Amino acid sequence: MSGTESAVAPAPATPADVIWPILLVEDDDGDAFLVSELLEEVSAPVSVIRVRTVAEALVGSAGAACILLDLGLPDSEGLSALRRLLEVESGAPVVVLTGLVDEYRGEQAVAAGAQDYLVKGQVDGRDLVRAVRYAIERTRADTAAQALRESELQAAERSRLERGLLPRPLYDDLRLRHDTRYRPGRRQSLLGGDFYDMVATPDGVLHVLLGDVCGHGPDEAALGVSLRIAWRTLVLAGVREADRLGYLQRVLVSERDHDEIFATVCELSIAADREYARMRLAGHPPPAILYPRLAALPGDVVSPALGILDEDLTQEVRVELGPRWALLLVTDGLLEGRDGPGGEPLGLGGGSPRAREAVAASGPRPPARQPHRPDRGPQRRPAHRRRRPAPADAGR
Picture: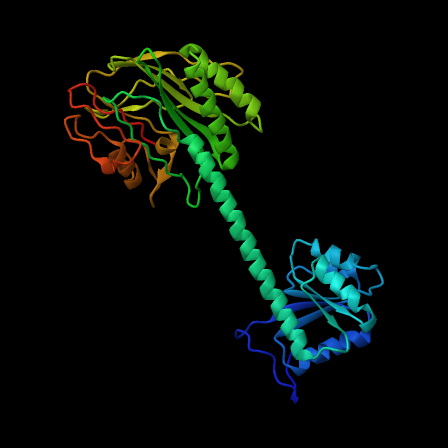
């Protein structure tokens, strides 16, 4: 509103060029004129839109910085107008205007969610502007505090899910070492449906699982945790290798929210002598040999992903590893995604800097004759000094 010459002091300063859109809900023409005059006297940085009923206010509240509400409206009773406006998604704060005889109802309105109440005839322009400003700032502060609490709760939930997706492998073979990398495939994405596990059985076989639930988000991550835990349980219970993915298929179908959800899985069983492995692929790319030379394992026997068909059709493939080796297991996002300004394919060949970085980070370390470096992290195991197998790297 434009200012007029007046003896009344101007309202406290606000940032330049800031105009607050104010919605005035008032059916009485005299009271509406009085509110406008009070704001005019102090050159308040506001733009007032007046409506006469709650129904009009519900339509016009979008974009309002604050709502000045008279409780005595023709289409409301008691605090019903306030409750209806507080339910609007716009979230504009409400300052209640009451008469002298309704002052108690103003206190009730504050208890019900209004930011403040003002008694008509006992308020000047400065008080009115101050009430509007404080209502707006308190609402912003409350919104920021709520967003912070929600962010902290989500971070705690993500941390719990990550612990389920990236467990501590169960093996004590000092000839082996594993390294993991978990990097989201999208910016601002902290969690996905990728999961892995490593479990050794009493016969000396090391069982390795790498999987990826389609999609990104907490729902996919929770499903990945369920599949990972189910697989570890099956291994520890002694279920045959040929039957495990069939059970995982049943878990996936029972736990997923939509029929379109599927999971790709790579399962390895590395023999006790560590010179060969048995591999099953369900829609998942095969691992790669990093040492002594970079080469992909045979991927010509890849069955459909879990959740696509009604049964598990995976076939076992024997892979010769040799006496010294290093393996890289990656989810399909690294192989199928594109990166860089030219959209270079990622892949193990390192078409993009990110792919080369991932391969180099998870690539083969020097053979086991190197001494153990304690700063490599708590999940890395020291390499044995014998010329037995080089570290098995489960890269992500």
